[in-house]
Structure formats: C-alpha cells, structure tokens
Image (cartoon, rainbow, N blue to C red; front, side, top):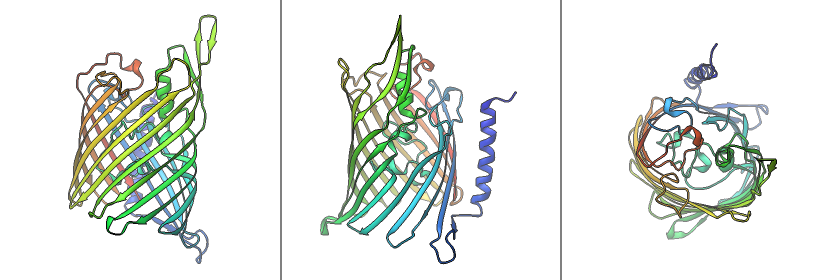
Length: 397
C-alpha cells in the first residue's frame, strides 16, 4: 500500500509539471470577465516545493530523515474597476511541519482606494505590514533565501502574522530634501487556525495530559513607518502592534477530573528595519521584540528578541548569492540557555532558470534549539552545532 508521503510527493510532482508547462506559455493572464469594455482581470499564481534535511533535530518537519513537507501554492486576481480603485484576492495553501495541512484559505481579499499620494484606504482581509517581508512572505522571487530568519518570519506562523480582517490607511508624505515618509496604520481581527504555528507552539507547551480545545479570534492594532532617505536605495522602518487579548482554551486531565486554565494574555510586537540597495548588492538588517503579558496569577511575563543582518549579490540575471546571521532568544532573561536560543548562519544560492522558474539551495549552521517544536521528537537538546540543508523550487506566472 502506498504511504501518504508517497501520494503527496507524486501529487506535488504532477502539480509542478503542470505549473512548468503553464509557466512556459504564460507570464500572467489578463481576462475580460466584464465584457470588452470592462476592466481586465489580472491573474497570477505560484507553486513552491521544498526539501529540508537536518543533521541532528527535526526542524520544520521530520527533517532528520529528509522532509518534503515544505509546500506553498497560491492563485490571485486583481482588477481596477474605477480610477484609483483596486480589488484583489488570493487563495492560498501551504504545508510546513504540521502547520497548514494543505487547508485552502482566503489569504487576502481587499478593496483599495487611493485618494492621492498622501492618503489611501483598504479594507477586507488585508496583509499586515510589518518589517521588510511580512506582507510578501509568499513572494519567493522577492528574496534570495529559502528560509527567512525564523525568529521573525517563522514559516509555520502564517495564520497568525500575515493577514487580518479589518482595514488600514496608508500614504506617503514628501519631506523635501529629507526624502519621504511612508505610513500604514491598521486594525482588525486575526483568526489563528488549529492547524497553524500558534497551535503547534501551544500544544508543544502542554503536558502530556493536556489538550488544545480552541483558539479565539483576537483584535490587533498597529502600524508601520518607512523613512525613504535622500540616499538612493536606503530606507529605515519601524513597526509595532498589539493584541490586547489573546485567548485559547485548553483542558488538562488531573487525577479525579480536569482543569481549564486561564490562558488569556496580551501580546505586543516591535520591529525595526534597515535596507540598502547599492549597485548589485542588497543589505538588510532587522530587530524584533515580542512580549507576552499573561493574566493568570503566577505566570511570568515573557520577552523574546530576534535580530539578523544579511547581504546578497546579484552576479547576473540568472545567479544570485547571499548570506545572513541571526540570533533568536525566546526568553531574554535567560540568554545563555541553549534550549531557548537559536543562532543561525546561512548561505544561499539562487538560480533563475527562466523568469517564471527559480531554484534555491541553502545551508545553515545552527547552535541552540530555541525554535524547535515537537519536543518529544527531539529529546536530547544541547548547545552543540547542527546543520540544515534547504532546497526550494518555485514556478510562477
């Protein structure tokens, strides 16, 4: 009998072949769905398949034996029904570790109106602006690397970080000789999934007798500023957000019955970014703080920190190389605890075979295990270094 893994690999192989055939013929599809005088609808799509192999631990899947559970696919459409108005939506599915599970979700669906360069509004299911990559995590062609620094852009946490149901206003304010200031401020509801990264981390923290029952939708408010400096290609950003009440329901079995703990907490995020494009070089650095303030008596506040610095060089139209170094501290009060930190040096090579097909290979040398989940699958954790190899190919149109 064929295993689920075999069936999944064969199914993905068929999808990739079809994507390759389609991509060879189409860059984007402009269809007249509203008649010959109506606005054209612009369709785009992508399929990504990755492979992860690690030397010591299972990370982002069963990687110590090699894991193909690293898949993304999306189909989006957009059109401009009226001047300065845009409507866009994307269907998306992914599978990373035990997150995603190929569930088909509405990634975004929004209406946007731009009054002028200074002010615009968008509403619906929107992308949450935070840092360089949060709202474009699925755009594989926009970066050199297979895995972005995971302390900030965890591939399992898309359902928590990327989208929310609500609205935002945005614009760009000229500063004359000082460049310009771009802003985005948003508010809405996030809807974490029981198949998402937040659920994985909660289950990982529960005792063996515990069960995650549900995760509530939660309000979130925040914004981002980008200072586009007068130096060509140089910009600096600051972002922040707050989830006033994040609540999930758990049941823990005890002798003679069960208990349902108070899991209500407040979450606060801050992120600071810098980016510089110079000739064929791209330099980036970001600093990210995440703070949790539990309501339950006896529960301590938790503060985590992640930073990274990266550089990439485009040699020609088909080859690019880059690297980064990042450190994650799950609890800043215990910076020397290797169970709570993860330090990662990565080197990546990107090959653009065509303008619709890219291939990447990346090596990581990691110390610490602070971002590992599924601890029962990684029973012996220490500060000894370990390796991770990541491979990814993406077809898009």
